[in-house]
Length: 352
Ligand SMILES: [Zn+2]
Image (cartoon, rainbow, N blue to C red):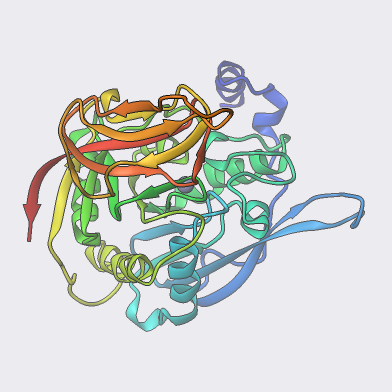
């Protein structure tokens, strides 16, 4: 009912017109066609150097008949590389003969950010993972989010979104899903995490879920799985290998790609409360006192922040607010007040 749509749009802060407006994005692929298609999501973007120009977001559709559909994304943040490296390769190598159903691959979701090597878009400063459900009449980032919200997510049964730490964070390599009110949906997501077989598997807690792609997919009832694989604005051989093996495992687990899941041992971690996060209260130079993956006791100093404006100042100590394992840390050598310095996780179990 258009009237109900309009009322929902108003509740969500959209004008009734914008909710009814079609997306300005045109795909050059046909989602119903069998075989492999390498194409684009073409988003008109008029600017100084191209009056009638477009943003061309690469997309690959691999389909073989009816069956479940997977939507795979990297580059949600533009400075994270394990996902794009795994997904450009998957798009190049996955044979439709080995597929039952559909695999939709968008290896660089926030393509302007990915091209710039930055977390957010250089066009509008949009953080893709804070822009959902997006707007068809919004900024470039909001228009991409809206296309995923209304056109791509509804096509998927399973949604896999690769992340890493980017330039400012570094993580132990883990695959993750969230605790959800719908326990059937939650169980399916954690089963896919287990199939991914990263060295660590996480029950993930978010600092703020508003505007996240994760939340949009989960509220639509999709099986949503994500990762944090390393960081620092680069990638490592180990973490790229984890990404490539893992995504094939998830597609096998979902029954979309032929073959058995190649499971390796994983350590289950939990982020049981907001106590897992520590934030800097001063600017300065950061000294990591323990390394990623090491055990930490509550009250232990995980990092020190040294004031550099003058000599003779005692460093600020950052103490763990819970016992566990250091799952993530601030990556650059300099830190600002409010930066996330460390993330702790409890070790739940080792599954083989
Ligand atoms: Zn990210």
